[in-house]
Length: 307
Image 1: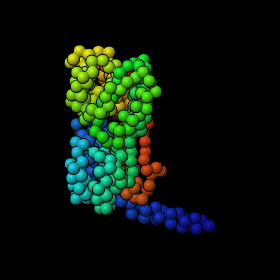
Image 2: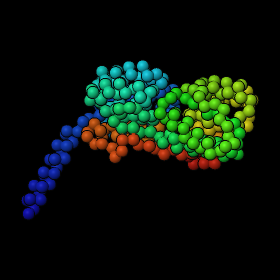
Image 3: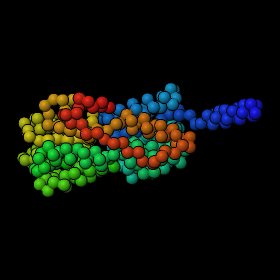
Image 4: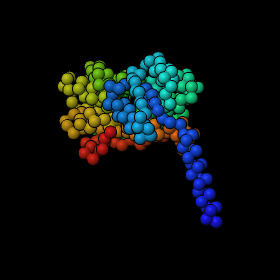
C-alpha cells in the first residue's frame, strides 16, 4: 500500500513538473496609455512593472503614450507585434476604432488586456467603475451647493471611462430639479493646461455658476488655477482620480472639495496577472473587472492611502 501511495505521489509531482515546464514565460510586456505625463498612468505602469517582475524578474516592460491619438496608438501596437511582446496592456484612445489593431495583435498570438478604458476585442478588461465614480463625485457636488444652482461638467477625450463618468455625474445631478447644467461638452484633455484653458473660457462665458465637475484630477487642478487667476470664488470643484496633487489640494485652501479615487497601480498589476493567466490558458472569473472608487474629501483625506 505504501508503495502505491509513493507511486501516486511521484506521478502527481511529475504531472506538476510537466505543467510548469509547459507554462509560457512572461518575457516582454507592451503598455500603451493616454499620456505618461499624467501621474495616473505612471502609477498604472509601475503597478504593471512590479507585477511583471514578480512573475519574472527579467521581464521587460515597454510603456508609451498614445496622446489619445488612434493612429499613433495603432502604430504602437504594430511595433509591439513586430517586436514579439507576450502581452499588451492597452488604455484605448478609441474603444471601438482600436479593434482592428487589437485583432492584429491577437492574430499574432499576443494577449491583449484593456486597462482604464474598454477596448473592443480585448481578452479582458480591468478598470474603475467609472459610472459610480461620476455618481459619487457629483452627488457630493450637488450636496455641497445646497441642491440648487448652475453647474458645469468639464468633459474630456471620448474614451469609455470619460463617457461613463459624465453619465454617472448626470445621474446624480438629474435628481435635483433646481440644478442647471450650463455646459457639458468642452474637452479638458485630461491635463492641467487643458482644464485651465476650458475653465478660463467657462469663467468668461458664465459669470454665475456654483459647481464644476471635471472628469480627471489634472483638469480640476488647472480649473482651480484659472479661477484663482480671475479671482473667482464660491465655486465647488469635484473630480475623479484621487491623485497626489488633489490630495494636497484638499489639505489646503482651494476650490477643489472632493475626488472619486481610482487605483491605477492595482489596475496595472491586475492587468499583468490576468494577462499572464490567459497566456497559460487560465480565464478570469469575469471578462470585465470593475474596481470600486472611494470618495475622498476634506473630512477623510488624512486617512486616504492614495496611489
